[in-house]
Image 1 (cartoon, helix red, strand yellow):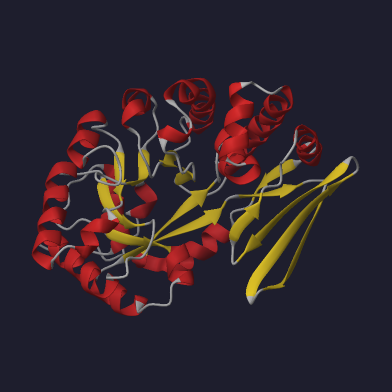
Image 2: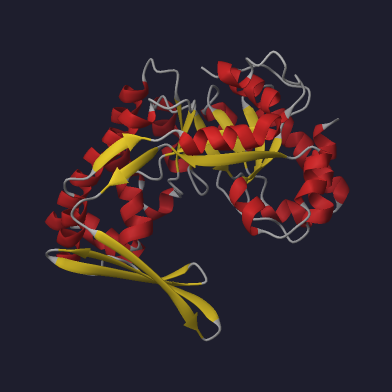
Length: 352
């Protein structure tokens, strides 16, 4: 499935890309990979060249499709509010308008605030078309070379997008519990579009496709996980079947309550898995629950505040629990304040 990551005969067999390819293919590694999300490289002003020189890799993300939405005009404006950057976004349709706004990229208001807003959003999405667009992925791969890999980005499933991006946790939880008809109709439209998106995404060269679920099960609950997420995962996996593509989901919170249900899905990897104390499972428990899944492990932020000997011991223990194959480490939730000391310790520990 991951042949493209190791096929280049001119590639350095010890490069980040080659080692990730081996790890994804199930080969044990003497030196596991530690890699950072591209977002942090672009948005955190620290000495990345130094860390890359020490052996840190990079995970890029690229959208695989492009949308055309004939029934909505999306207008963004920016300005200043109390010396902070304010960004307003308006979705304008023939039956009404939605509005959200941000301060320094922190959301202050959701697009959907009423029952009527669900109907307006549904109108905005009706008639949308989706086509494959590999250009961003190809440019990313060319720029990265052997320093890392590019993951295809298909954003979130409809339930998680509504909860996190469109409605907000409080209103969404109430409306989902009540099965508000306007919400359920919107989710049906979004589901059809998501399946169209995957049918196009498989036409691109991306081998790993990620859903940015940002799931912590305490915000959804195991019953809704089974009724709302499992069915769309199964439909997506059917689209991916026999294409050589794999599905990874970004679950960065508590997951123990759904460990059994997740094990039954043929999802290849869990991205940004965070062990205790920030998550609710140890790495050993995760490996026991999901022996064949790829663990993209985000070491807890608290580890970075430990003394170097303790941090190194924690990392070596994590390697033993996750290994001998199908795992790597990620800098995926935030860059620790102690990065200058802690990240070299982690990289050095992986060389042992």
